[in-house]
Length: 236
Ligand code: ATP
Image 1 (cartoon, helix red, strand yellow):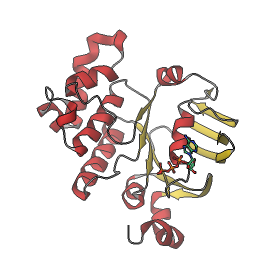
Image 2: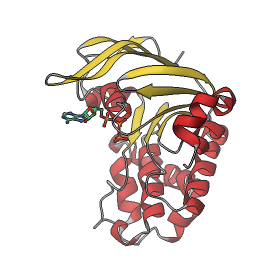
Image 3: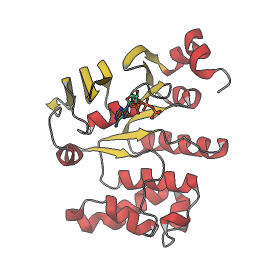
Image 4: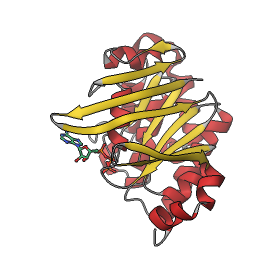
């Protein structure tokens, strides 16, 4: 098992945002975490990355306890997060954005790594010398994912990549996530409110509600579950 979260509690002051989360991600899987606004999905991703810190419980990554580890050490072990939305550098070119994500000590590999992500996102190759801020929303999201891949992570954390994207772009983004998983054998943990697409893509899924995991199963099982339908799929 690559990632194992056990009994995880996280607080913001008095607010208990995570109330004892248990979940697992195996090597090679796409696992999705769905749930309504405010369920605690982003808090879980951030706690995995070490900020905020868990108040209780444990996070193991490839068997190593990372619960109290500083964020940069967690990144160094091979966990990369593509943040929600557009936190790319708008004044830097696409290529410079990718440089910011690359491992500085491995400059020699930069070209090969950039080529790898350009093969996944051909539109970024076309825009290599364009400033990030001039890209469309979908392209900026692609750049955020591409930048995360430059550090050659073992586990890619994605926080709502489909948020605010047009349906066409959502389809494209999910197709690339599938490619990243299959072609690059990348393990992916995908937080999404777009439950339908996420569950179709994922091998397994977890459903969160107000700080708890309330359901889990294969993507297909959850898609077929009437309670999931009523809560997360109808009208969405
Ligand atoms: P969203 O889809 O809106 O990002 P989410 O499922 O990711 O929702 P979180 O953002 O993790 O949910 O929020 C979980 C709970 O913690 C919410 O009740 C939220 O109001 C609260 N919360 C989040 N960040 C903070 C913060 N910095 N300070 C205080 N409370 C916070």
